Image 1 (cartoon, rainbow, N blue to C red):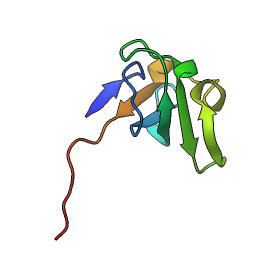
Image 2 (cartoon, one colour):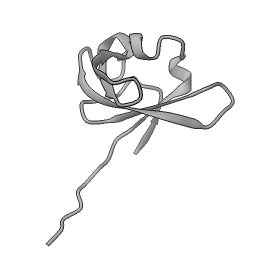
Image 3 (tube, rainbow, N blue to C red):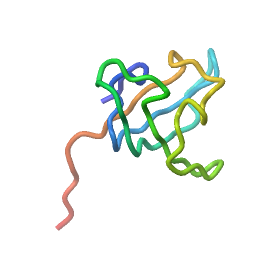
Length: 83
């Protein structure tokens, strides 16, 4: 599922960012959250990413120059079983 913004981000979700009027280009992994689902902000979400070797970093620091309107949350539902 893809959600506009980050208000509903949960641990394990992916957050993608984009430059205004551009395609989504970078992905963060959500490693922890605080606050209430539906009203989370960049200060409630901890992420990890490989590009700048960020580990357990607040999204407000990692994506300080990006508006939440230029972010989306991706949640992978279900599972893929391999026999």
